[in-house]
Length: 200
Image 1 (cartoon, rainbow, N blue to C red):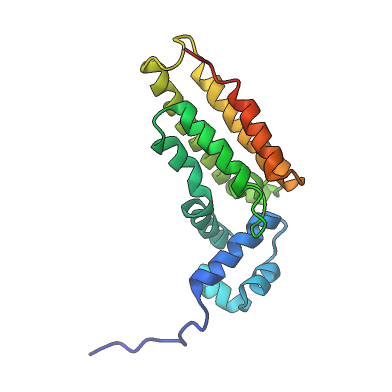
Image 2 (image 1 turned 30 degrees about the horizontal axis):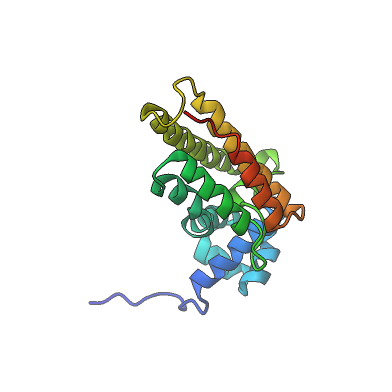
């Protein structure tokens, strides 16, 4: 005998509500975003938010995953798809200049800016974002190390330092975009950074 479903069906589009939550967290950060901010943007009441997503922290974790699968996916794609590390970082920085300044989206990178300020009780949120940034750093270094092994970089290239340099440039571009830097401003930064690339 079929079990009757309990409770009323959801009266909202969960994916659309999650997308709006992404934008709120991206724009204001985890700490500054209240449940009231989220429910207002998502167009639902607090009971619906808790029923569909759990608490604020659980919603934030899901929002970060959604960001990485969509707006933030250009970074690993650039690193993985281009034939050389220099091509990869050129593409990554130029795409960052565009994506960090899109007029209809919050500026910068959500993973970089969403937990710039946090309370001690939210250390696990900040730690999870630090790990995501560290994962990107490892991805960068692995890509650079592969080019050094293939003879595309000088044998003495410090792969860790070069990876951290470009990670720092990207983080700086994210913050600059939030401070008002334009796409053209960031494209100039990208081209300047690429001139530091070592040649074999």
